[in-house]
Amino acid sequence: MAHWKDYGTVWSDVVFFRYIAEGVEKSANEIFVWDLDKTYLDTSWGGFIELLKVALERAMSKKNIPGTNTLIRSLVDQWQVQKAHRHFPLYFITASPPQMESRISEKLSIDGIFPFGCFYKDNLQNLHPKRWWRLTKQVGYKVQALLQLRSMLKGDVRQVLWGDDSESDAVIYNLYSDICARRIGPHELRQILAQFWVTGEQVDTILQLQSSIPENDPVEKIYINLASDTDPDYYLKFGRRTIPTYNSFQTALDLYQDGRLDLQRTVNVAKDMTENYGFTNDELARSFDELIRRKVLVDPFVSRVTKEMQDVGILHFDFAPSVIPLQSVSAPMLSRGFDISGVHEPWISDRIDYLHDYR
Image (cartoon, rainbow, N blue to C red; front, side, top):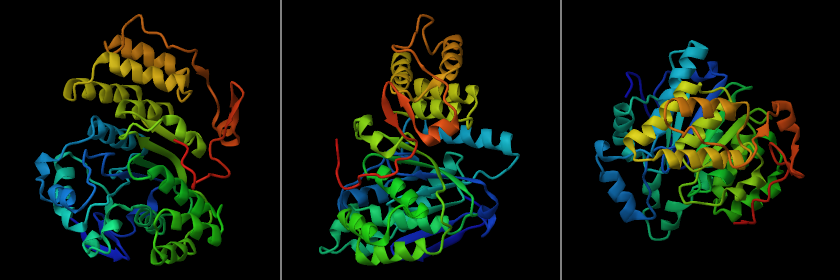
């Protein structure tokens, strides 16, 4: 995978493998964090037997979520053009055990993906009848991993996070944001974490890590892959910073709007999905229109994407959005919250109701 490698640093139930020299991440102003399971790799497991099958699967047999490899490689290319940096600051988090590191590392190398590091969950200690329930409870593990990563980064770093709807990633990432910003007090935080099956030991570690990091919110944006087909309206309670997407094309469209991808690289993601994963042009058109209807995409980006996709044959020349696109909204307006058809939608919710699942 890389010429330099730290073979596993262990904190509690978090095991970290570093693929760059220590301290390199301190130079990055922006960090990308990608959940591996159901967000990059098309893998899932619900217990020991499924976990064993995944562990025994060869690297070449592991399949990607459609478009994700091209999406990451496009982000890398864009980063290197814009920043003139050779290394793309990417980390993966997985609930897979560290014993799978060599196969996952091999798979990422095959894909041409070279992250700064990867976090694994030390699940072997949970292979006991009294601890089996911990195999599928990820909130405590992932929050610890994110805070441990935060402790390695520069004070004013910005982070873009990817997850899915099968492991409470929207809850995890927003909780992490609230913990960093100190929007929740220690007593309330303990109560919330207990509701998500976070153990007392994990909570103690989380509070200890919180005390060692800067008091600011590093989270720039959160993407949630709707692997379980959750209603996207559920995510409105987290604010517009949290973007649920049905596929990699939708994610690429928002990344283009944010300036992290150019239009040609956005088109490349669409082509990958049609040429290699069987998506039809009509499916991509519906995905495009769905983001417009949710008021995620705004003009003039909608007009530019429409013209380019028509020129390359992905959209029909008679395509038109089913609703009038939202007119361009500035970042400061987003940060303060703004009205769309009388509905107030803040960029980040001041107060998130974590304990009630309105689905």
